[in-house]
Image 1 (cartoon, rainbow, N blue to C red):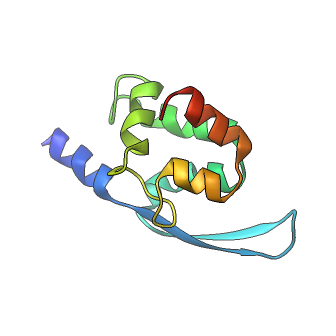
Image 2 (cartoon, rainbow, N blue to C red):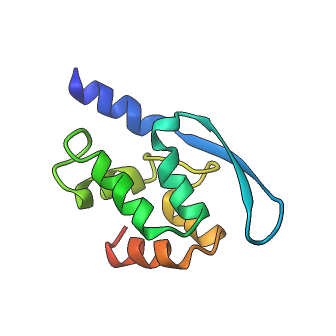
Length: 107
């Protein structure tokens, strides 16, 4: 049953729309499975600390370590931000800190 719940969580996608009010402030609207929204928010804000905290939150449920969680959520069938994988979305958003972290972990 737990594996089924994990599969359902991973197949759920997180989509959101953004509207930039100015360069410093962004309004972000999350729709879909909000449980994974912090992963997308970390990319939007290029916040590596938030990304790591979010990954640690899922340790035990999705994997035995933050690295195994990262591999699961970053797969093509994992979490989606605006319909894109975490890597694609970080490229699109020019999230250099997060993109470097993802690449260094061979995601």
